[in-house]
Length: 253
Image (cartoon, rainbow, N blue to C red; front, side, top):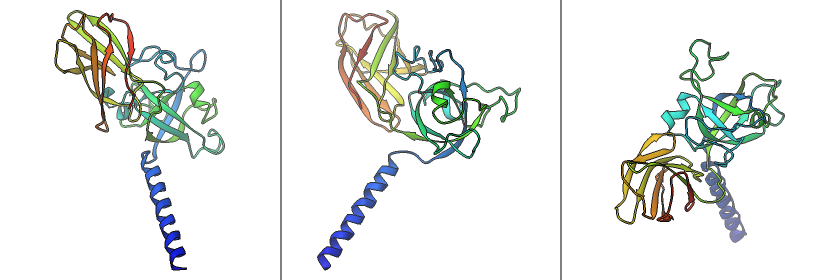
């Protein structure tokens, strides 16, 4: 009996640890509000303040969101993933409070001419998400103006590797980093040519990073660090013949 009791105790402890690890994989639920932006197909087609451009091409599509200043954090939150569910509104929230996972792709600007509960959703210090109509319809009735939600940070599940889109000119080099997994939020980027060492890049806007180095004719490697302090290096992502406007795929977190 003593052996059986010990085995049961060990099993309980293991299950408790597993539950704790599972709960630690996502952040705590916090209160916010959400609205949606009407688009012709119910989806957000073009990006904004994060620089992603066509959100379907960037793989974010309808599961994208504009964040109020409190959450956007001057663009450093671009690429981060949030789980949202509609709560505390029996008329507008769908039964069972289903949730959706969204990627931060844009900034929701404040409108201080309107109150925070009618039109000024994104006024500081409100925490607010502007969703696509299609994603909003997965958690609430489309007829709703604004709904109360709970949100939490979650890991980003991405298909394929990090994507690096090159732009600029011989004297100004810029790369857009998309499809970042896990934390999703790139906070530092370095580039290396075959004739250079590692060059730290400065954030231009959103997830566009820049440096003033002529890297033409060199294979390019990238080092990306996320806000959870993980660093991933993708060697020789772009061949020496790369051109501005091209996108190349590296490793994934």
